[in-house]
Image (tube, rainbow, N blue to C red):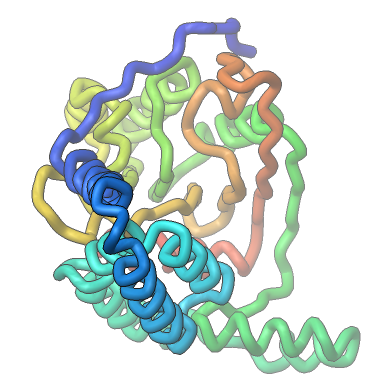
Length: 308
């Protein structure tokens, strides 16, 4: 379907956030150098580091973060106490991160009345498997109900997913909502833009939401091309030179919704390597699913929550 291309995408670097992290590393190295230079203070310094690391570990263990994340922070602080503590403060205590989290939670609350759980579906699931019902209850508490009357198609490879995705895009009549973490120039994106341009001319609304980290790889000319074709584009959490923890809040989702009837999601991004057109790390294996039916409504609301 597509020609092989071995040319890697060009990357652009935002220098200030990189300098901030680099400065933490330099401070840690300097602390070790001074410790070795003035060896007579090693006992006091090591004891101080140990106290700080243990106090930090106690604070981390008592947070409500995922256990794997807590363990990672504790290990980092124990091995590199200066760097670990400074990095944690930077990512958690500076303005930005909490504000974004509160905003997302408010949007979920607004969308919840439109995405209620069908109790009959839930009870039927409980009759089939009580453990699956318990999992469904947990998911609904997070804002994700379970659905019936939905056909699911599984794709083992990205190239198979894109074949069906392009066909479904051609059938769009009302709107296309698209939300992706990675958007990279290439044959896949060119084909998507070609279809979008055609569908906009037919009166189809196209909303394109992409993560801010694409500023490193995605030329501005691509976004300009989309906008000129009539596609509404919005960037989630733009990356800039300001010192803020918003940069640590990223949108890793990959969702495409067509007319609230068909949806795609999974691990496949809009980039040639996911269709093995460009083999960046050898043959790329990533999976995806196609949904058709009632469950698509939930995917539609997920995109709208971040778009608004």
